[in-house]
Length: 248
Ligand SMILES: NC(=O)c1ccc[n+]([C@@H]2O[C@H](COP(=O)([O-])OP(=O)(O)OC[C@H]3O[C@@H](n4cnc5c(N)ncnc54)[C@H](OP(=O)(O)O)[C@@H]3O)[C@@H](O)[C@H]2O)c1
Image (cartoon, rainbow, N blue to C red; front, side):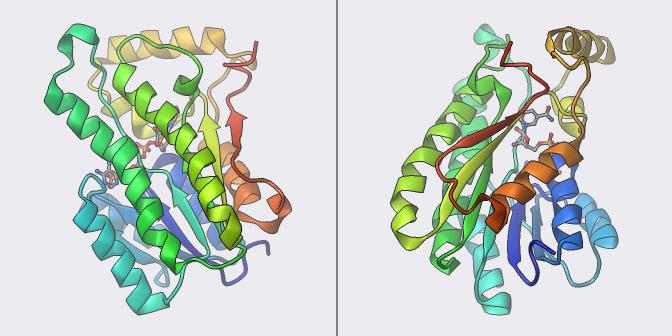
């Protein structure tokens, strides 16, 4: 078991990539703390993850919620070994449709939420700890309608370098996993019609060298590598898991 008795704090652990990662980490012996904003999805995830998973409802757009979540972990478990700052969401908005409120909400979750997840959990972490941030293929390629999400993900990529440098003296590693197009509920929440979704999926699939969407478990396996001592000399970097989407 690669994560025996490790305490893992996973945001967005109720669905898609985070949920698959939670299941894999549990199978590798980890003690799970799973954060999500939707009470029903949190409950449903808990049924599958087992009684010993600590489920915390928090809206990561609110720093007070992140603080309260981390305080619950401190009171109950005392420390954290691994953080997977993975939660994220966005609707599609072309340039002319973007409003200040849209920017604020999007940045609050996809950048500020990630930043404060790291800031608030880091004091509970010790030497040997590992922080993994979920970035995106949008770091590298432009896709119409996703300007703000892409900018937050590029900012998150940058954060991994700076916070990696800040936390290295404490023996804490910070890395990113960058998904390409992965089959998760993410796309269904983007505010697109079924027709638009099919067209986006077909367009993406055409561009992916391996000619298929990735599976969330393929991200989970990469997160496991970055979480475990198998990656003990890796920090500040990003592992791209995208079937070649951004490489060819
Ligand atoms: N799927 C892809 O193709 C793809 C590509 C590139 C990057 N990514 C990134 O991968 C990460 C995981 O996405 P996914 O594909 O697994 O999508 P997903 O299945 O929709 O999962 C998103 C997770 O984020 C949580 N979340 C959303 N808003 C939240 C909030 N305000 N507060 C707390 N938690 C919140 C959701 O929990 P609730 O439902 O409880 O809110 C859910 O657990 C995201 O950062 C996404 O940007 C995905």
